[in-house]
Image 1 (spheres, one colour):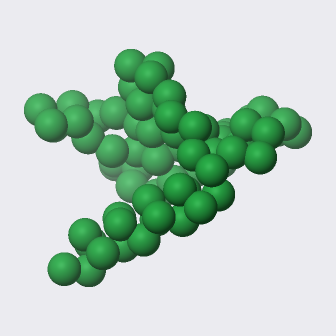
Image 2 (image 1 turned 60 degrees about the vertical axis):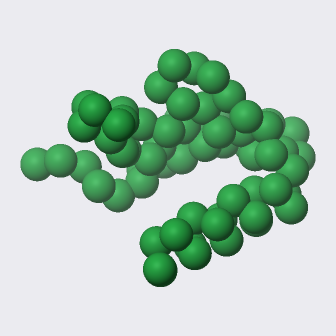
Image 3 (image 1 turned 180 degrees about the vertical axis):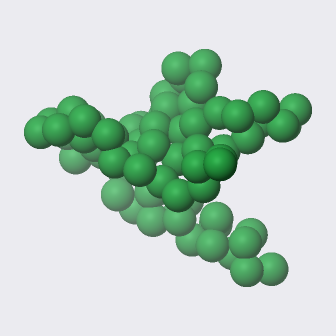
Length: 70
């Protein structure tokens, strides 16, 4: 059975939110989301990361919500 729901991983300061997904070729992947100080760190399967301020994270959330609800 394929995992669809995000899961928490780790403990203490190393807690991460793992989001199972697929890449453009349909291969299973995952995004890792965790806090880095006062910012949100999003890491893709190639280990490339993006640091978002709380405002930017909110904007990303809103954009994803808009895309899904259209």
